[in-house]
Each structure stands twice: as structure tokens, then as C-alpha cells.
Length: 19
Image 1 (spheres, one colour):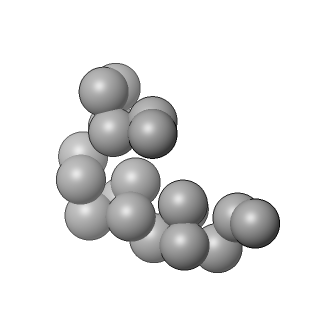
Image 2 (tube, rainbow, N blue to C red):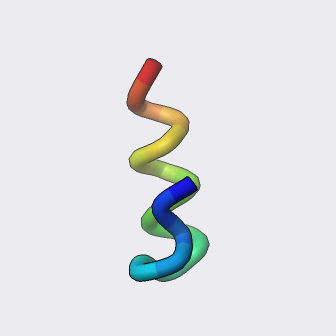
Image 3 (cartoon, one colour):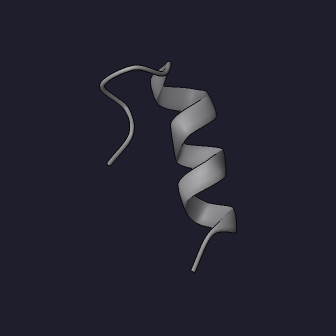
């Protein structure tokens, strides 16, 4: 997860878009 350096909401969106 990249939520360490990014807000949870933005990270969730990015992670959901990525495979």
C-alpha cells in the first residue's frame, strides 16, 4: 500500500484503479 505517503482516500482510489 502507498497510503504511507498519501491520504487514505486518494490511495484507495489509486489502488483500486491499479491491477
